[in-house]
Image (cartoon, rainbow, N blue to C red; front, side, top):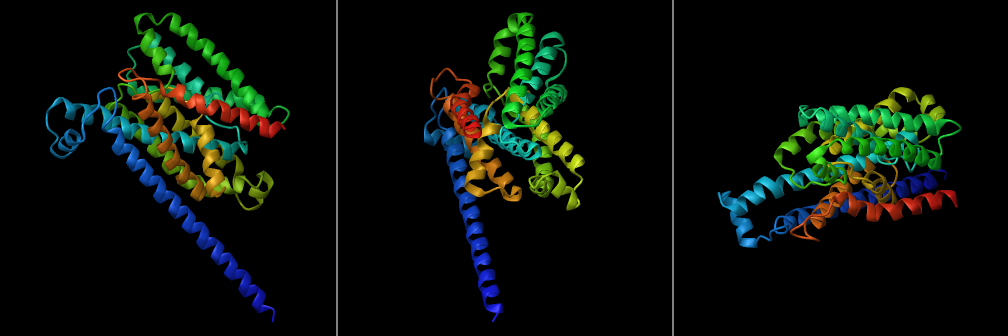
Length: 345
């Protein structure tokens, strides 16, 4: 008699798991379709609109005409860069929020992006002989220092979401003041540095993609290893330690992974804010909190979001181009206000 309820309960659990698996699969398939549509559509638009037959001919034959050069040297590497950078920023936000157990912990709100930008700008202005391939390492040092300082300040008296946002803002303001001081000495390069600081992919090509790839791929592979530790960290330090997790080691590993993912993007695309904050929340609301599923879904949504933002940036004011950071701020600013309001209400 007692086995019947148990069997029914097991059947309901299996049904829920099957439904959840189908939902994840459907979401991923739909996301891939949207991503592919955006990528294909982006090949036809930009500062110079390209007719469909010309694009098809350039893709199939790789002719030497100007349209083929626009596609293979500008639009295709730029789209790949946008997708990889979006995935990296989204996963960076997921990992940082999981490590800090804080919904406002993101690369931009903890000062990581501004700190990395400050370090890169200082070297770009005062030591211009440093090659671009070294910029991620420079940004890593700046991001570690800024992010660590924010966490240290916020943890005094309890690591609350609002305290972390305030501490990160204070560190970001300090780094922004340093950037402004460096720009005073930038000379004729100040315009290009200023545009880079607004975040964007204008003029980016295969070389920049090769700079980002080692950092992004290393960080994304580390995210696969971090999925289970992040799930355990969500239970609290004491519970995670009871289950055999080395809390200090995995928290440090997660923080380093999040910073590695974000500084690689900063080095090639500038500080693109709010993506690491918004996308994890959107993914969590539609897919749940299990990081084994949350991380790849967030990566997919991040790739879609940044590719869409980049396509809008190069078409809305064509032939001129808008900085991506402006578009993400327009969406991310109200989202942040909503998050703080909901947490403090």
